Length: 360
Image 1 (cartoon, one colour):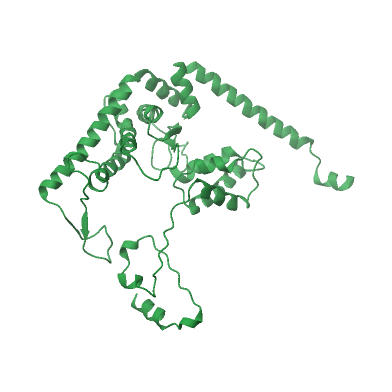
Image 2 (spheres, rainbow, N blue to C red):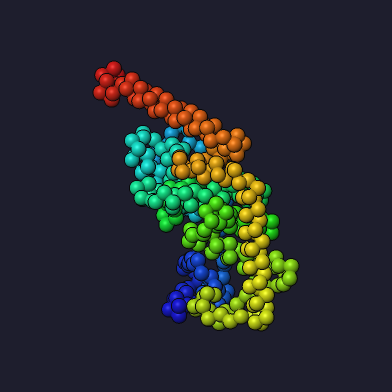
C-alpha cells in the first residue's frame, strides 16, 4: 500500500494519468488511500436493474443465434440480482444447451434452463434417491410452493422441482413481482414464513424433520437478526442499531469486533429473533393446515412429474384435480412434438447450399 501511495504522489500533474481501482471490500481500505488527491472519487456500482440486465443480455446475445420466440426482456425479469458476469454465463450456458439438444438456435427453453443452471446448479437427474427421500422432498417443496402462492408480499412462484440441483434435493424458484428499493417489514415476515414453510410441511406431512431445511433456517435467522439489530424492526428494542465495533481496519468487519451492547441486551436480541422466527413458523403451519389438500396434490404431482410451473400449480389449486394437470401436460407435450415435427419438415424441404448455388 505504501508503494502505491509513493507512486501516486510521484506523478507530475501534467502527465494526464488517471488511476482507477476497484474493490468489493471497501471496509478494508485504509483512510490514507481515500484522501484528496488519491482515490478521492468513490463510485458505487450496484447490480443492474431490469433495464440494465436486458441491455447486458443484448450485448452478449450478439455472439449466438437466437430463435424468433426469444424475448430478452422476459429473461431480464427472471434474473433479479444477477451480475453482468452471471448474465454472460447464462448466454454461454444457453448456447451449450442448444447444441447438446441439436437445436439450430437458442430458444426460450434453453435460456430458462441456463438461468436455472447458473443460479441453482446443474440438474442431477441420474442421482438415485430412495422413494422415502423423494416423498419428503416433494412435501418440503410443496410447502414452499403453496406459501409462495398465497403469501401476498412474497415473491411470485416461478417453478418447483424435486430434481436435485447443486447440493439441494429440490428447489422452489421464485420471480420478483417488482424491483424493490426498500424492503418493508411485511415483506420480510412473508419471506421468513416462506422459508420456514418447507420445514413446516415436513413436520405436518411426514411426522419428522430432516436436514433439508438447513439453508432455509440459516437465511431466515439472518433476516430476523438484521430486522432486530440493523433495521430497527423490533417493537421491544426499538429503532436502534445493535452491532459490532470494528477493531481492525485490515481484517475487515467480520473479524476482531467487540459488542457495543450489554449481556442483557444480547439476551433480548436472541429472544426477539426467536420470537420472529417462531411466529413465522406457526403462521406457515397454519397456512399449510388450511390448504392441506392442495399441499397433497402438489406433492403427488411432483412425485409423478418432478417439476411444475406456476401455471400448473395454479391449475392444481383451482381445480383440486390432478387429472386436469395430466390433460394440461399432455397438451403441452403434443404442442412441443408438433413444433419439432414442423421444424424437421421445414429443414427437409429447404434446399441444400449446393442446390442454391446451382439455381443462382
